[in-house]
View (cartoon, rainbow over the protein chains, first blue to last red):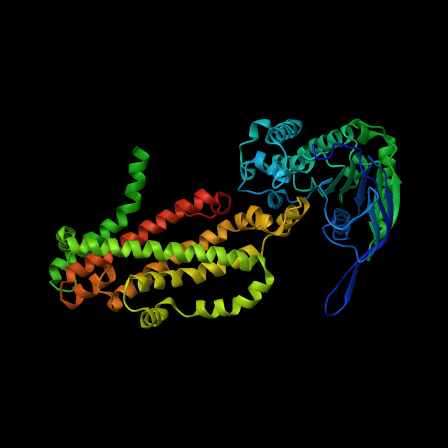
Length: 260
Length: 255
């Protein structure tokens, strides 16, 4: 594969800021964001809607530049997206290409790169199997349900065996039942290969359930208000974990902090 | 089979009633400019036997096809580049806008003055009529690719041209096809007009000559032929749209 050394990348941010300037005034979105994410760690970024969570994720992805501060991934400065990184957005219906079949969508990262055909085919087959879409390979995205489409997007993000996976509200547009299934699917895939994962979500329960650490953003411009360590053991279970007293305590704490 | 027959009946009941009423009124009226449908039909059978008329039809269709394809190809190609490259857009958009704003019908006399009355003139007229609306809709569609898709291109490390070919142009297919569909009508109109204005051949010329020599039924035949060509092209485009951008058209098509 493209990334044979598949240990997760570490992410270091120091005093990141982001502001937008238009002709009238300067709008500051993020301020003084410093964090260290270790290799293989799963971190959730939480906060109210519109606070700048996605902006932070897009900066980490290299899709937009920070206004100031230092950002290093795997020890290198971030200037643009790299192939060691997988990115999944909330809006699968907009990020999948409707003119390509499921297998072609999943193979998209291979395009224009010099990779053996047989290897490609095998990688596509493997990744589709891991998300349970093998028999839908020839379908088009718009012929699938929302949850299945998001699985395609996840498969596409994982096909090059990324060392960093960035998820922007990945399960916000699927129904509740499927949401739990997708959470477990991602958790399994990510822990198997020790991929460093950053997941942006406004759902506190999901953040705690998925993450080793939860980062709460608040204020305007947004700052890191608090970082919570989730000591729940893995693999987690949708029923058992969510009834665990540690889970509930953390949940209460997060909700209190969000209010205050 | 039964369902198909039923569907067909639903589609044609109104035209049949209109033709029926027309037949009755026309046979009572005896106005030479308003022949009955059956009279037009017999004129049609007669006209179809004449070699020169079939030749006219063939000439018109080949002009329409070559002019249209030429205009469509240039429009989509240049439009895509203008959609992608900001500087090109900035330099060329105002002029394109201006030329497009002149009705294609008004451009025909100019093209004739410059190029004479031959086949090249007719092709150019149709081509110009198609080119600009197609170009504009392509520019708009390519330049407004959704952010999510731009992110995809960026995270896949696509270069500019690869992004344009793999993502931006396919994503614009729906809007480009809409532009191409709308251009059919303008192409037809321009073709007819360029033939009426003195080329001497083609359906447009046939209509105008029939009218001026008082062969009114023949004139009606010409008009119907144009209508049928338009109907067929419209049908063709509905099929093309479903074939090449089903995700875009399936939810908004009329049954």
